Amino acid sequence: MRIQIELAHGGDERVAPKSLLYIRQPTPREAENEPGALGVLRLRGVQFLTSDSFTDLAEEFRAHIPLAALTTPSGHPIWVNLGSVVDWDPSPTSAHPDAKSWLVFGTGPRAPRLAVRETREELTQTWAALDQDDSIFG
Image (cartoon, rainbow, N blue to C red; front, side):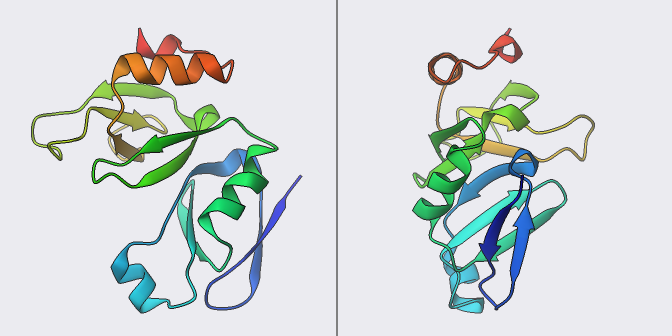
């Protein structure tokens, strides 16, 4: 199963839903550099700027994987594939002041990480609500 996405610069890609880490809105710099960008898909090893909207992408992928709406430290919504998260760490004091947790998408020092505002308790509830294994929270 693959989902076709439309790339902001033209063309398209077919993406396996399980390869998704998260979906977010483009940053102001990304939107300036790629005016057609309405959404960003972060996969293992690659990121796509899409002309598909953030909301449309979430709807499309949510039909195939456990997507949860979380919040970046700066307050922006982000959709996270809970099936891709392999570990959780409390946010270090050096991170953004509103970051409460780090979600880890692999092993080793180069594994992708995502800071979010949600606490361990809130994340545990989110995992449970989507019937996902919450053992990563200890």
